[in-house]
Image (cartoon, rainbow, N blue to C red; front, side):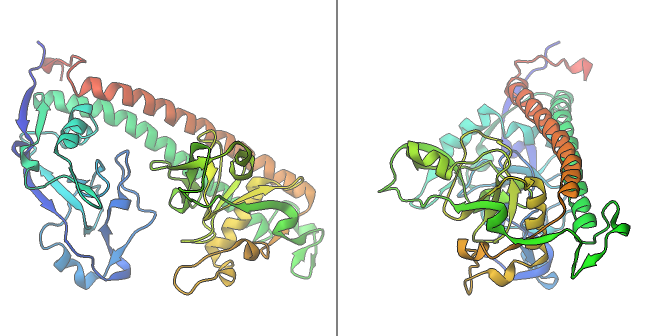
Length: 411
């Protein structure tokens, strides 16, 4: 028998709807998380790479309205809309500004089903119809949110739908974990060989000064070319609208490509400001030195003024150079080159003063052989993730509209 779906106000599916504080607490170096819009990704995950903490003694005050619990669904209701995530086990923190939370009623709705429903075309249309456009930001009014309609099948079917979609997400997360493990292995190998000097055959190599025999130190400009991206100027820029990377898109070792901006580039600027496979992309401001390797995740990507593009010269391996620069950035060795009293920058003339340890050619080749194999595995996993995401995204609207029949008796 085909399961019967019914349309109900969303208020019938939850025990509580709560919004976050309308102010911002004093930041702290450690403590509970102040969960902001930036910590929720467009594809439904919590991103803890850039966390704002609150002091332990302030926690009770900022959770007076609600303390997020595992299984709660958090979402954005102002500025950047349509971001949703489920609070995981072990999370301890409070809602940030422009964030709200739903605590579902397990007798009425499966939390996983409702979470996936928020990504359906039907729900996105509801948000679009109820969105209020302000002078500065868009928002959805929480006062009318309880009346927003949701189309739901019986609980057993909800659980089946959530189970099918979550299986894809789990496969993607497993692949992401393997990618992160491969990255960690490459970083550990770099430090073992080139920081601690425990490379193959190190017992037979003597130190000359502070470096093994046959190694040298060279300024970055001798091993790579580098340049800043294009200045954003809506009045002067001409050409085609193309996506570009800004500081916000560059993480340590990876890119956040969810919210790409565009500017105009002319044909003769494509080579000047464009990215190629193996380019090292580094932040000039914000958190100077933060970097990742571009692997042509998106073709035709450009860079904006606050980004350095570092491209290896002949006889320099891009993975080795990336790990060298990342190690200097994370260890604080680049900090002496930063300018700016409040907002730090690493301008091009300062970047030129960065020195790179260049090991012997045979050892550099051996490191390249090991790490390029890891990179190939990571790229295969990334392609698997892309295929899984495409399949899930095709299946999601069909499951959440009842187009795919899931019988109650089979649940």
